[in-house]
Image (cartoon, rainbow, N blue to C red; front, side, top):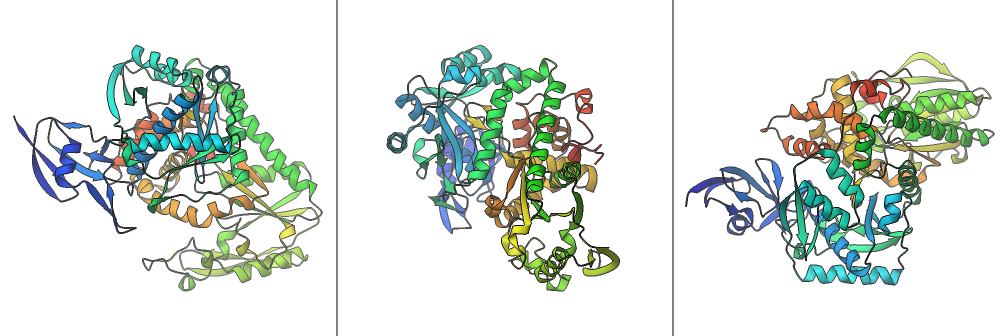
Length: 571
């Protein structure tokens, strides 16, 4: 039989293999584990990148390839682990709750929020949640552990549209069947586990035995599926019960159900039937109502509140939110004034450095906290202060004769990554400050048991804006994203619950809009680029979304938060 040459990036060597050799066999011969630099341990191989595209280890080589075997330390390895764990959970739910459906709703800070529901109620848009007790969660977890201990294999099959659709309807998954119908594929990839059939839109681990670390924790009406921490595969992520964020996600999920758009398939159908503009108008009205509600909260405490801090992760729409909130405050008779927190950086030579010896501009120590507090206290006392301006080119603070003094109806609005961290203004009276957290907390799902990543949503936003306003290539945005996320995990996410109000900047029509702009950008990234693997993953994800047309995009109002990313904003 003809031999193929496979270049393995793990050992940097070429290997001769037989035509049709599965990657699992090659992994056993070359490297059954990969080294995790963070923990200094060897991790089992979960999947492989074949010519920079993610494949399961069942994949058979029929031409020469470049292959990299990956474990949990790789982002795609983690996604493979989580998808596989979700399948195990689903099998356990189907066995213990006949006639019910597992609904994986959205990401929590500590895992995935799940509910067990009636499939008929889900189809009607009014979820009938089957509340599970702590004892029942333990039984569910025990069954999952039995499936894992049995080391059952995952297998992939290709089947035609009609056959796959029948499987999903029989599973009580009409949203998944609608998604399949809306994307118009002739064949579909289906995975099996212990006789059960489903899909999770990506490769799975070789078998259940690889999924040794997990937990189920009761949360709200359902439970949280937990998986290993990013830096340590031997332990689960610590449980963080961030009730404000969870409540905001739940609110958005309920709103999607009320609108009858529970998943991407229904969204695709809505757009294909020409109802996109109606959806845009309703979503924008919801945003306006939320801004007005936050302004009402501030107004109700106007005898005390003089400062509004706004924080949120990258591409959450903080700038637009600041402007629209200011407008709503003006409607109520308040007079918003804006101070840029970036002007309170310390001089460049005083900026702390990171572990690589480079300036860490996102560290709290990069700000002159004493000077900031002194100016805020002076303003709160009715004094007139000269505002600084930071010269980023010279790395120095300057004063250009701009003064500010707060009148009775004036209110300060300040936006920055540390705005929810009480350590930023420890010397300022906390009762005078109202804190707002802004983020794109989408809880629209692909289908019943596949949620959409809020991080992916923000990455697409940033890619489009970076390319349009800063001349940064899509490759550049992707390569910077890990550093951006690391800064968010350190400086923003730990302080979310300090917010007095949470504004969800996600839009129900957002992904179809983002696809129109992002797809051409992602296709520019060449195969030899280190960003190619991520570009391919995002393109595959966008295959499940029907894009908006230019005419429909033109219907997005100039005050929309989406205009911050695609242009045409009038704020």
